[in-house]
Image 1 (cartoon, one colour):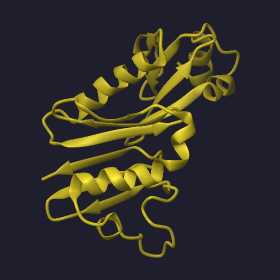
Image 2 (image 1 turned 60 degrees about the vertical axis):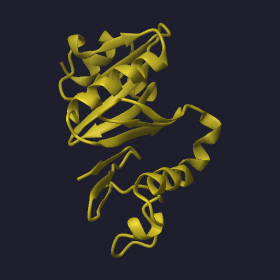
Image 3 (image 1 turned 180 degrees about the vertical axis):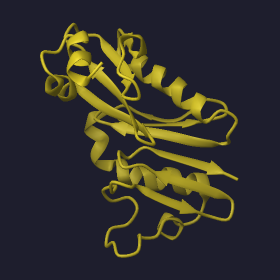
Image 4 (image 1 turned 135 degrees about the vertical axis):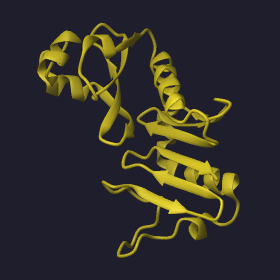
Length: 176
């Protein structure tokens, strides 16, 4: 099934209309995870690994779609000690992988301007120390890690932790 057929299955006239109604949720390698507001008012959680009707989870609320993707991400990191997050047009969420305990739940459109600063606070509290020392600017770049993510994202390693900030702003941090 191609993207146009997939869009039609979800009730959209074009694949452009589908993508306009979609929010990027998470990236895992070359697979992108999406949450889409459907024409009938429901929400769909899906990824583009394989475009097929049986790989779409339709939900009544945005929060249900988020929880569906949370469970999928938790399965990816099963058995690893760390935290992951997503942020998008609806805010910021940070979850402990092992316990699935929500560390930060910030579903507030108006607060998005403060997300980079909130990342600094969260990461500093998780790993200690000054975040500018933990995540220095990439060589040849003027902005620091909390600036606009690049296509490749950011990665930082420390003596007992590993941190990856993806191009969409989601992160995974793991203690060793």
